[in-house]
Length: 424
Image (tube, rainbow, N blue to C red; front, side, top):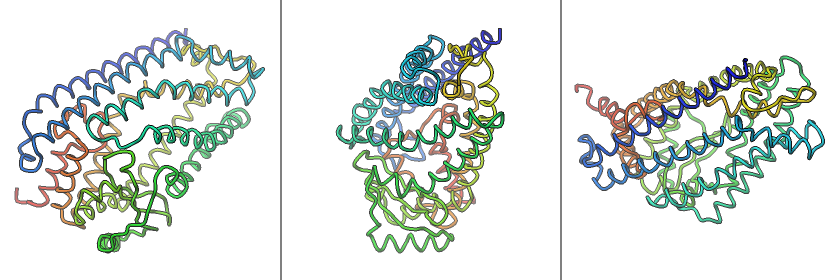
C-alpha cells in the first residue's frame, strides 16, 4: 500500500514539476520575444539593438534546449526507476560480482554514473559546439572537450571512490546514527575541497598566471587594503580557450584565498571597471555571504541525510521506485542513487527560496562595491558584461524568480543608479 502511494506521489510530483517548468519556460520565451524589437529605455544609449536581439535569440535558444533536455532527463529518470532500469542493472552486477558486497555497491554507483554520463554526452556536445558556437561563445576544440571528459572522470574516480567507500561503510557498520557520521565526513570533505580546489584541481584544467599589469595590480591591492581582504595572489585564468564568456571570482579558504580574473574579462573592461567588479566579489566575502551559504548547505545536507537514514530502511521507498530491496544484503548504494534521483522532484518548488536568498546577497554585494568604488564604474562594467555574455535584459519576472541567482539587469542597475542619484 505504501509502495503504491509513494509511486503515485513520485509520478504526481514529476508531472507537476514538468508542467511548472514548461509553463515557466514558455512564459520566458514569449516575454523575451515580445521585447526583442526594442532595447529597454534605461539601456537604449548603452546597448545596441543588434546586441539586444542577439541576447534575446540566445536566451530563447538556451531555454528551448533546456526544455528538450528536461524531457529526456525525465524519461531517463522514469526508465531508471519505475520501468526497472536500476533493477536490471543491479541484477546484472549481482551476477557479475557474486553478491551484494562492497564491490557490487561501488560498481552499481559507477555503472549508474557512466550510463548517465553517456546519455548526457550528446547534449553536452550540442550545447558546446552547436548552441554556444552559433552565438560566437565557443572557443573549445573537440580535442580539449575529450581531454576534459577524461580528466573529470579520473578526478571523480580518484576522489569520489574513496569517499563513497567511507560513506557506504558508515551506512553499513555504524548503526542507526550512520547519517550523522556520514554528515561529518561529507562536511569535512567539502571544507577540504575548498582548500584543495584552487591549487590542486583547477590548475589541471586551466592555466593560472600571476597578474602582470602593475598598474592594475596596484589598483586592486589598494582596494583590498581598503576593505581589509588578504589574498595569497592575483591570477589570470585562460578562460578564453573554452569560452568567450568572462568572469572574476575568488576561491580558497583561510590563508589560501586567491583572486582570479578570466582573461576575457581583463580584455573587455577598463581598470576602474575591473576594480568595481572585484569589489562586488569581495563584498560577498566581507559580508560573510560565503560562510552563510556554507552553513546553510551543511544544515540542509544534515536534514537530507537524516531523511535518507529513515528512508533506507523502508521497503516502500525501494519498491515505490521500481526496485526490489535485498532482504539479506545491503541496499545502501541503491538507497543513495534512488534518493539522489527522487529528491529534486520533491524539492523543485522550493527553488525560489534559494533564488531569493542569492538575490539578496547580490544586492548587498553591489551596495558594498558602491561604497568602496564608484557605483557608475560597476554600472558600466555590468552593462558590458550583460552585452558580452548575451544576457537578456528582459527576462520573464516569474521565470527569473525561480531560476536566476542574480537579479534582472533593470533591478540591479536601477538600485545602483538610485545610489548615484539619491534625490530621485
